[in-house]
Image 1 (tube, rainbow, N blue to C red):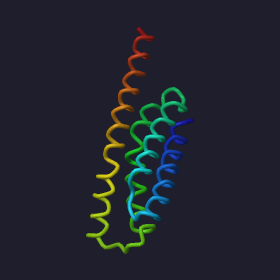
Image 2: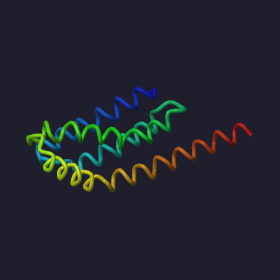
Image 3: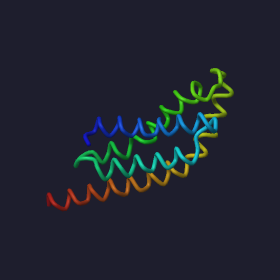
Length: 122
């Protein structure tokens, strides 16, 4: 996978699972968290060399974009700022462990790859 491919596929995976979960539960949660983990893993394992940074940085951004777009539309609520804010904060709270653990693993993997590259060039 190239850098643009990683960005698109991670967004599509997270958004697709979020649509399903918002449709049935009216907010994101456990399934979206697993989709975030899967997007980290898939991009780190199947990405080309040099795409590790994009694979680590993109999932939180993809989730934020998906949540901001999908909560008011698929969630069935109007664009009430207070309702949207409450849904966004509760959604972030429910997927925070997945975002944090995925980011920790992703950054560990990124720095491990950078260390390998530095060792080869020396």
